[in-house]
Image (cartoon, rainbow, N blue to C red):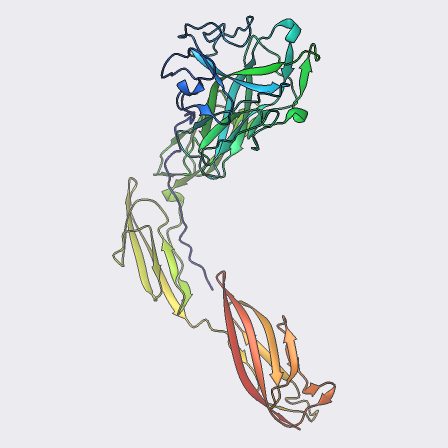
Length: 464
């Protein structure tokens, strides 16, 4: 059977704005009031604690020593200039004390992540500068995503049971002057709504370097700055172009470098032929990709072949290009479903002009033709000596079972999962008695991906 050739083409708009940050208040600069004490992360709305820790907020507007940037931190020697804006957050990521634990901060995203889309994630950290005799460094800090708001009470030395999507692991962060980037790429499973930052590894999994390991207690705190989660979706899925029209494809994204399927390396290219174009954006330790299909109307084949459908089988017709639709049935949707034969056409109006597509649909009986003899003669004369079942189907089929029963209901012949059915008239090696025997056939037909279960039955007269 011939399948319908009208193609489904989606002409979608470009994705979320290029480089748009889904993290609100990413630098912790917008404050409801100037922090004056530790544990006031909630002043940087909508950031809050994700556990029973007391994450700190530091800002240049504060008048409190060790809260005011840049001399903010837990020690007299603490110093870090803001990377941007006027402040930053601080979380404890390691301690050998038994009365306090690690800290985690959380915020809702500006938009839910979209299934299958790629995202670039980064944030910056810097260790709180500790006195030289207390000098120590750790590695583990990451960002995790959750679908719903997450909060958990933790005991000391316990980590949140979440798997970060980006993480610094295995390399000590020792730069107390600059900011260390933690970054990566992520393909969304959809529905992610919250970001959480902290150390998601327990003590034994956290790499530690201490100048004087005998000092107790000692803590490691990271300043946190400029959290970014941005979708990479610069290209529309499909672009419809009129005759002789060119299009500019813009994949510009943050500070990426680029490689197009055309081997061009600029962020923007100009194309004038139809086809699929893809781009790779290289972002530090990961690669982001996107693809667009360019369709020129003059390149399309508008002549549709006739199509056959079964009498009881629905068929969906879909307009091949975007625009304003009017079907011969009066429908104005992109697709219609039919079950009867006839000539169907759709008129489409778009910026390139007016177009008409038509298709002649015919119906036919698609039932399998079953050939089963009603008499066999077991006299070895070479004529009707065997009971043979044969089928003729327009679709692929599978015989699940075939059985023959005598007049008392006893099963005297059985075949399973075989399309080759032949009975020689014997039961347990002996030729059966003359008479009438019942048969049962169960088979399955695959019609355009849909399985149909069919049961047939009848009788056979055996002669000797």
